[in-house]
Each structure stands twice: as C-alpha cells, then as structure tokens.
Length: 143
Image (cartoon, rainbow, N blue to C red; front, side):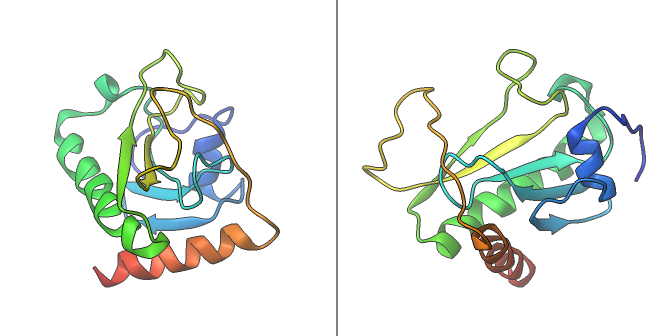
C-alpha cells in the first residue's frame, strides 16, 4: 500500500485487515467491500488503500485507475444481484460518514423505493453478507 495510513480510520483498518469486511475486489491501490449497512443488498464501497479523505485529495494520476474499478463494479454488480442498474455516489465532507474517500455502488431496480437522497438502510442476515461478497467477488474476477 502506498500513501498514508490513519489508525483512527475504520476504512484504513479494513484495508489492513484489522477490521473484518466482506471483500469483493482488491488490487494494489484499491479495495471494494460490502457496506455493513447497505441501501440494498450488494451495496459496495470502493476505497483507495491509501488514506485520502476526499476526491480532490486523490492524486491526479490515481483518479483514472480508481474510477476504472468503480466502473468495473458498476458494470458487474447488477448481473450478480439481479438488479437492473446501479446508483453511484460519492460525498466530499458533507454527508461523508467516514472521512476516507469512498464511492458507493448501489444496485438498483425500477420501483425499489429509493427516492432523492433518502438512504434507507437494511441489514444482512447471518452469513448472508459473505454469500453476497463471494458471488460479487467471483463475478468481478471473471469480467
């Protein structure tokens, strides 16, 4: 991992394995894992391994490769979870619940009830997140 690490940051601790999360994607610079409070099941967070707080803080040469991963997840996720599309969102400071750059890739289906910026949350049943993560991880490796 290049860059910095912040021991107080939960996403940095996911990156290092100190905090367990259902990982769906990993490369040298980026990691994707299931949100522990998903808007819809299969909701993935894509984060840089280095501690970067906001998109403007990400080195310019990293923006393209980072969003290549976001695009890969957005392209693959609907087929895995039976969705029709995705919602891709990123906050900078305002409404940013964890001060570590992260893009939400949320599976969407017409009529799913998501309206505007209201983010209702759901929960995974015991073992269900691991099943979702395994299916998404396998599909991301294939494509």
